[in-house]
Image 1 (cartoon, rainbow, N blue to C red):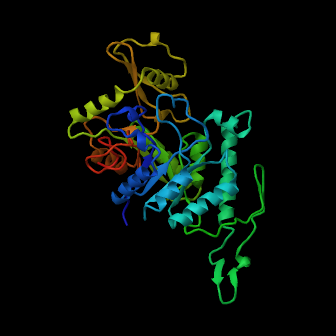
Image 2 (cartoon, one colour):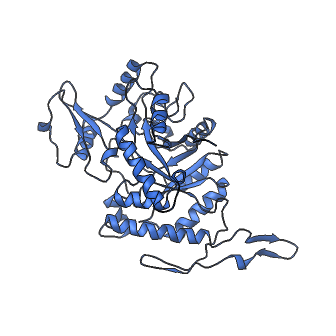
Image 3 (cartoon, rainbow, N blue to C red):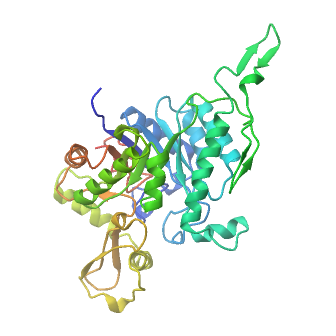
Length: 402
């Protein structure tokens, strides 16, 4: 079989544009309606997408005052989606910093059984420092320490899933033998971060373990992905940057004896859709005009290392913003004031690449795929709870699949 394009739908309540919830076509009454998310997944499945993905974090986002930036616990939501779909993959986020391996192993094992082998794990170490205080900690663990814990965490979880061999469940009513205990083993793991006896109290799953996904682009993150992940979510603003990341992560995977097809690179895409370039640009402007002044300044400040004030900006000026963090290539932004010089606009792409105006999705993604800068895409629709005239999942006009 030849090389295939992999497509995933990143579902975010309210959409990825921070002002999407204010759009006249948005249905904020459906933000917590599980039937809406089931419908999205069903549409994505009908469109032949490979998976749906839910992000998560154990702390409230700081911009929730002006944007629909709450979090939905993914296991409960994905379980409800599992019973409404048949084939599409179900990727949920779980933190290796604020969970324990035994709990995580049980959650993913249950989801894999419930979905008949469709569970995926987006492995995160949690970057939000404020999360520490939600778990009785005075400080958020340092970056390197979090990745060291993540490495051991994944290894322990793997041991727990493997603690039940294939065929351990006999269920022989005649003999009265339910399980062959010679095929169920303790893990007896003891190392720097964890002491886990095992075995897991859930039988072996249809997949054996979930598909591993990771999104870190720091040196530690890329090293972790190269060894463990089967897909890596990323974002790049230029073809050159995307090609560099692609080549680097594939080479790192090769150093662990892995083939290039064993680690897929899936950059995000957030398209504005229109029948013409003018229509797409008008739609983009329509959304940007809904961004509040406070949200705009907060977004711009988050891009710059220094604090911005109104004196930094002149009416009509434009500047490129780059976040000083582990993923600068993913945080390109254009911030500018309105013609009146009052409201800062910030069109961000911290998790996805915007499709250039005048470029169709059918041109952009295959171009990156053919030039060896991606293996597919993570579609991040800019708006969420709207109805699409084209039947697209997750957006009205800005849709991930048109």
